Image 1: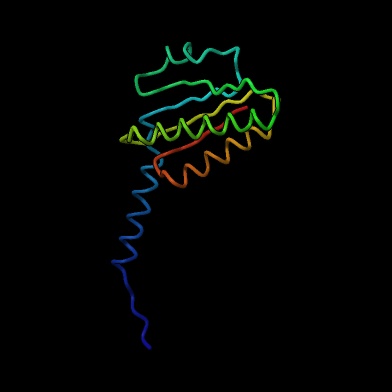
Image 2 (image 1 turned 90 degrees about the vertical axis):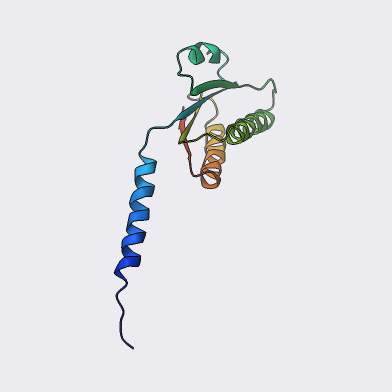
Length: 131
């Protein structure tokens, strides 16, 4: 057996990796901010200060039970992500989910899990969360 050097294959793979990392550092072309259970903050006021490629929405639930509020928030997040995907954005998309600090930390974890799953399915999507 004789070892064979495949310089071209390695160079191509390195180039693809370099291209992918440069795409990840590009600024997003679209921004979606989702305010989760923040009734005191009007999404329309934030929307007024955003560029034409940005949207701000509120994820609200009138349910009293915690698990129902979680379900409402997750369903609304999924619906927003589906609408975003159907619009077929050309470049990178940043989705920011904002949850009240100290409210329900497991709600933030649930929404972050949905974002992580969406990022795996849609490579142009980037997710951020804040509490």
